[in-house]
Amino acid sequence: MLILDALTRDYGHFRALDGLSLEIADGQLHGFVGPNGAGKTTTMRILATLLKPTSGHATIDGVDVVKSGFEARKLIGYMPDFFGVYDALKCWEYLDFYGRCYRLSARERRRMTEQLLDLVQLADKRDAYVDSLSRGMKQRLCLARSLIHDPKLLILDEPASGMDPRARSEMKGILRTLREIGKTVLISSHILPELSEMCDSLTILDHGHLVFSGSVEALAEKMNGNAPLEIRLQEGCGESAVESAVSCLKEIPFITEILQEAPCLLRARTEGGEEESAQALRELISRGIPVCDFHRSPMNLEKVFMEVTEDA
Ligand SMILES: Nc1ncnc2c1ncn2[C@@H]1O[C@H](COP(=O)(O)OP(=O)(O)O)[C@@H](O)[C@H]1O
Ligand SMILES: [Mg+2]
Image 1: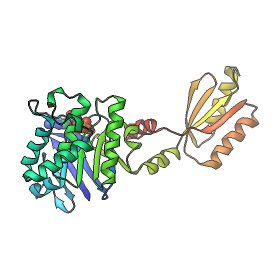
Image 2: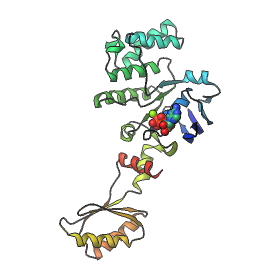
Image 3: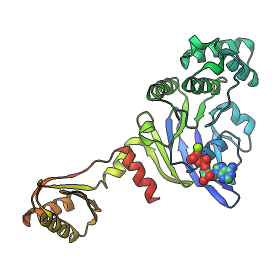
Image 4: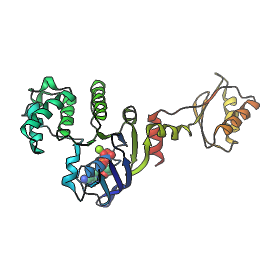
């Protein structure tokens, strides 16, 4: 469906996007994650034909977004990060207006307007002025607008930003419905857990570079293989026990870093697997160190995100 090939974009001397290559299959809900300034909006604007890449290509269903912008625009619905709404219009008029822009017939516009207002749960606001809507409602109306010409691919730039938890959860429900009806969705956020809950696959971007791309499970697996060891010593064991534990761990080659998290809690970064962990535990016990708990602490996705973007 969507193929990005070495997409690069410079702003003057500054490279905002550096050789991004990526494939997204038909019908996927794909999350695009990265801290502010990572290049998410730049990528999305290129895909939406609003910005030309400095080099590289992107195709949507085989249609090149640079060479065949007009054709590409029929395939995509784009919801920008900052959008204007026409305040003096009623909700249905707003959608009708965009339907006209896409040259839909009067009948199609009527059908799509009612259908989309239903989809984004604004049917009861049909005749309300856009001005009177809450922020979350405006965002949903804007999402409806991006669907007016029934595009195959939706590009949503931080559609849930600034929403309260209830509004977010409504937005998630709508996105799930879109996936059920077979749309391919590329959705960005700087909050990883928000996307990992609902996406099939993810791309993590940092400083214009791809850090990770794959399924949510693959990301968790990749990081958990390297999860740090958490070693808790007996409560009140005293400084000398902690010191001997640290010096014991320092002698073990596969342990690369040791941090003291709390008076009796150590965290060790490692490079080895199960066998090496067992060896570390044996060493600690044989030296009489009072170990109460010894395990790899599974990373939550927020930690994973901090970790992968930090390394890059
Ligand atoms: N029009 C522009 N001119 C110069 N620099 C820009 C412009 N737009 C974005 N940038 C820079 O490019 C980088 C990526 O921006 P952006 O794509 O908006 O990131 P994100 O959406 O991930 O926050 C940032 O460092 C930003 O300051
Ligand atoms: Mg952005």
